[in-house]
Length: 409
Image (tube, rainbow, N blue to C red; front, side):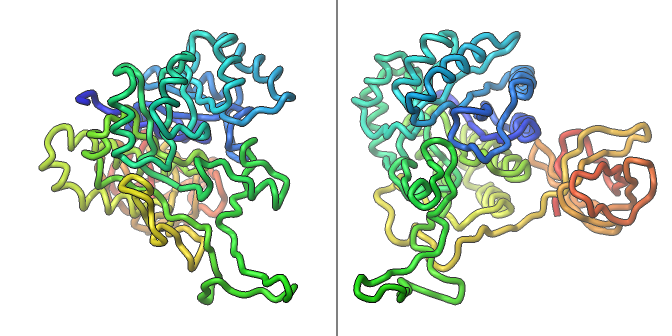
């Protein structure tokens, strides 16, 4: 496959969607306020979705909307109305719908016929006959199950129509349950992972109880932090883009609709450069690998694995000693606009102070170290720091920052 793969990036809010587009995404996937699997994400109102799609289309990018719950009878009537609303969006409607449930596919085809159908990884897409099944039902793209190896994906590619697209995850959190179809959350809390309300019990601490010793909790493997036997490392395939392309994957999907704009900007920009570098020359890609790895390490992550892509993962794919992320950078804000004096204006995400050295992260891959020379609040009053979340701050920096630049430290 010589076609340039799509870089597909998640967005849980309008701000993050715009960040994804500016920082290198070819397409963004989002959730509306209903029928997606991230009920705790901010998600998009109808107005925000319309604005986000228009923004993406202005830059020649696409937006896909998730409707990938496993629907119950009570969901269907509302889903039909929702698809009608998406179909009627003007002047810009979504470019695709990500769906797992066959009944939802039928409703989408009936009520949103001009929007492409993409089959979610939740549908357990593990073989080429499954792909052909969905193709015959009108789907244009299928997201591969996370349990597939690159060799299996390559075989699927050889057995399906050339114009049919394969989408596969390239980076982000891994679910311990098969294709993300987990029952633990529902069992423990009554919140159904397959209805968008997962509480992530795979990240919790567990012990063993022997039947004849009730109340006696035996550690499985323990350090001072506890035991986390279900806690998977995060997927990272930045070193294997040539193999992903060789397998015939059309869309490289980053996981993370609950992530911050800093995470999305960092991962999108890094994978954008890595893909473009490789398509320019493999030598450029190999030479720039240390930069990619350095950038990815500035995201939040749980240690990295290649998942199932090179065979079934061993026990090394799990993290047994903690359930926490590594944090290598602090998100300060995004330059929203320039004020009348030409100073960048942000809505603060984390506290920083006059005199701090921070970093401007630019969409083109440039990072600029700058000093904070001064700051004013929304009333034009000079302040020494910005302690209040989302506070409007006007900055004086030692180097120029532009609209859409991201600030971190």
